[in-house]
Amino acid sequence: MSEQHIRVDYLARVEGEGALKITVRDNQVVDLRLDIFEPPRFFEAFLRGRSFHEVVDIVARICGICPVAYQMSAAHALEKALAITPPPGVRSLRRLLYCGEWIESHALHVFLLHLPDFLGHESAVSMASDPALRPIVERGLRLKKIGNRLMTILGGREIHPVSVCVGGFYRAPAPSELRPLLPEFEWGIEAAAQTLRWAAGLEFPAFDGRYDFVSLFHPDEYPMNEGRIVSSWGLDIAIEDYEKHFRELQVPHSNALHSVRADMGTSYMVGPLARLHFNFERLQPEAKALAREVGMCPPMHNPFASLLARGVEILHALEEAHAIIREYRGIGEPCSAEITARSGVGMHATEAPRGLLYHRYRVGEDGTILEAKIVPPTAQNLRRIEDDLRHYVPSILSLPLPDATLRCEQLVRSYDPCISCATHFLKLEIEHV
Amino acid sequence: MLGFGNEYRSDDGVGIAVVRALGPHLPPSAAAVATEPHAIDLFERWKDADLVIVVDAVSSGSPPGTIHRFEAQGQPVPAVFARCSTHAYSIAEMIELARALGTMPPRLLVLGIEGESFQHGVGLSPAVARAATEAIQTILRALKDPSPTEGSRQRLEGPKGDSASAKRPDHDRKP
Image (cartoon, rainbow over all chains, first blue to last red; front, side, top):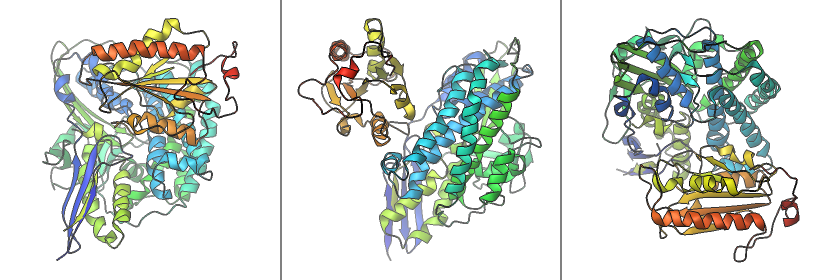
């Protein structure tokens, strides 16, 4: 009987703190744990007793990379609880803000965190030291900057923007503030298309995952803020019914909860692959043509190809943002709805860069938050990541340990886990005992 | 002048405190930016600067208030600055990325101030507050004489790598 151990004590190139420990006995994985030791954050608890006005800015602090996602899910959920309809114009401006976040978050992950795995480099710094790859890093940083500039103009600052409120925006930009960005978006669309063609030629480890994909579906647009929740294994539900179909479990080795399907107890995948799976037809024209060209059309089974899915979504977001800015004439005053506090419950989910992000709030008569529930995408993916590793590890046991370890890390990074958001990420330990 | 940190985590805010205190004393050619160290592309902000000074809190086990001073233009950032970051990139990695991309300023002075407490709360520990005052004096001296001081003298690199260009009076230096 032979046992092997794979250990990664501190997972690099992910957001937050985690470790991976795998024990293999006679080529079977007998124990596998994605330890999430990032401390708990307690956001749901300390939102209680605060005014609904404060929620959007507090939840933005959950993440420095995807604050807009938290703001969008919270604003929409509270608008439902308080029965508010934002003024016209808010909808497309919120999509534009989300485009900014998708661009900066995906560009960070694709170019600086995930690409080194495919190129045999330990980091973006070592990639940038290679003259052949330096232009790729430079391109990634410039693409990321486009997203950040959009966030700054729309949100007041690039991290934790301050312009979003329940009911709309505190301030909407003048068309003259956004127009100067157009030429940079035109460069970005070309650069993102080039990158996608180049990245499609990289070597993607073989892996066939038959996933229960879960994402929003919208008949008219690539989903961000609205739609129904659909799954490959048969769900088609209103966002309000999320908690009837998905539940959270506590596991001893993780400060983040694990989400599973309530009916079957099975794991599922949220994120760019899931979105693309259900919404391919509603990609922007160039993104759709490129996705088809590089083979990123449904059905998709390889989690490593999420790198390309993010590339497609960067291109999509650049095209959509360009179109919105071109048409933008300002949204007039006021740019938010007037609100009268009332009691109510509101739930909403939007598509964060890493996948579906669900919020529910119960608000008291005076507008105080009585209860808050936040289910981030990484928590929903954790069980799926463990399941993937359980299937994947036996196929790579013949590799030298450092290579096998790296492959496991690459697989985990395919999910772009944001552990800070979920803790409620990663050292790898493959243990052959 | 870039001050990093989170002012709501006690001594972690020392970089921000230094930048704020320096503001009124800076010459017109200098700019001070206080920020959380999230953005990997922070070096975009020092484009065209002749001298960049980075101030951040460190936790290396030295006595609280110790000022770790490092000229980063000539050699890799030492481990004391490669702090464990809860975010994808640390300041040390950001500086090394800038070096790999060839976007290092002619001079980059890093001041790391050893913190005592990184707990939730506002305000600096006495030893760290004293070190902040000392750091401010160090920075004002560096602005008067932008060449590296004795003990940490490095060969300057880059096309503008001499103290003459750093003293150009009409140059709009923004970090």
